Length: 158
Ligand code: ASC
Image (tube, rainbow, N blue to C red; front, side, top):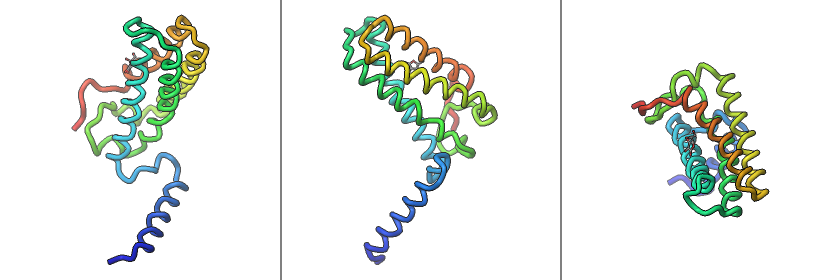
């Protein structure tokens, strides 16, 4: 048996090393990166969709709920990009086209635009005006779509 103290020390050392690595390297294996970015997109989409239901009149406008959802969207928008590192095109089924690893500048520009647009969505949502929220929602939706059109495949890889 390995003493618990040794295990704890090893775990802390590993965690410390991970923390000092660049964000792109903070995944033990490609599958972890793929699941991480898919998780961020899934959560982002779920909360963006709740705002969509309000701006499209499918559920009543609730300013507080909209602001909470927008904060989550803005937080999630920052996360997926670090998980598209080299070697993360294989390891689990996904829908990222190979171009995403070849067009780093364009992808970065799209990611930066999404981060800016979702930050604006969160700011606007706090102001409590449905028409402004609808406009900011539309801008974010265009950002989502631009990258999906360019970089999201119709089918999952395997
Ligand atoms: C959503 C969602 C997306 C975007 C996109 C906008 O609600 O889940 O991926 O909007 O469809 O074009």
